[in-house]
Length: 176
Image 1 (spheres, one colour):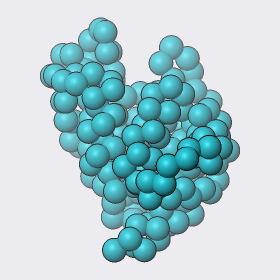
Image 2 (cartoon, one colour):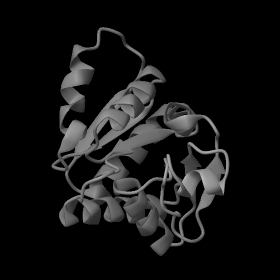
Image 3 (spheres, one colour):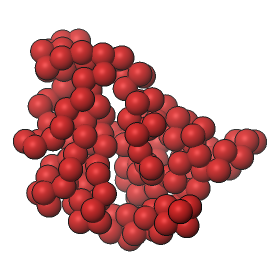
């Protein structure tokens, strides 16, 4: 989960990190779930598909036309992505995407990413934060430390996509 960058160009180094993250998720044998939007989620999906990984894109739209045309206007995801039309808008899409994840990894982001984090934290997910990517991801640890409710969520951090995916999987294995 992370920066869509709607209306602004995201730094190439951020998009490269997101693509590396997607590759590592696929190499680990995990399924990548995104919000089927542009920016870091799209780049992560591209990376996962480069490794022939499974990608599920949860669209807020009810159909392909609603996904690609205003008011949503998202790009088509990489070829081979399984696009799931929720018809629930952006906020509803977040809930479905997070509910279907065992773990959630964050890369940069803003308001939508903060909603995704709150949903993941409330559901006690393993939460990975790709450090050094800016945006709300840089603030998530501080936010988690101020929450007075123990939901069972575990936060793991690393600036390296490969190391972060390994740490997240290790945390998931501890739960089995």
